[in-house]
Image (tube, helix red, strand yellow):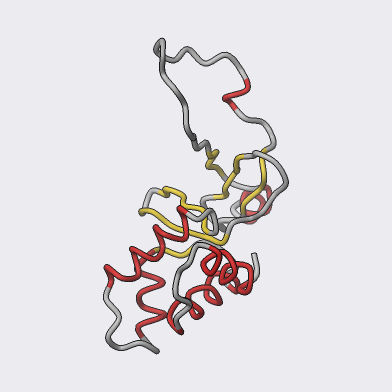
Length: 140
């Protein structure tokens, strides 16, 4: 996702487009992989000395809610990346070594899932974590 697409999504929701939010959009548009809230805070703190960690985290959650960023849970914590914009509903296979991400078109919700009677699913997440072929071959 490009920086202007992230900024457009914020603007369409009526958010003020501040220099900090523009910088945040560029940071994710240019990031090759995942960023933690701490990564974002440390990167942006070099330019914005008064920036608080709470402000960074609130903006990350907001961009996740706008479906501009995707949130993933790794063993070392929560990380974000710009939405991959794969067409249609999909999930991800993620290499734990290089963090390369592959779209997985299959959805486990497409099969019969035994949920409690009356349970209304509003959203779900499903990621597969492992080691990609390149990382496996480098380690042997």
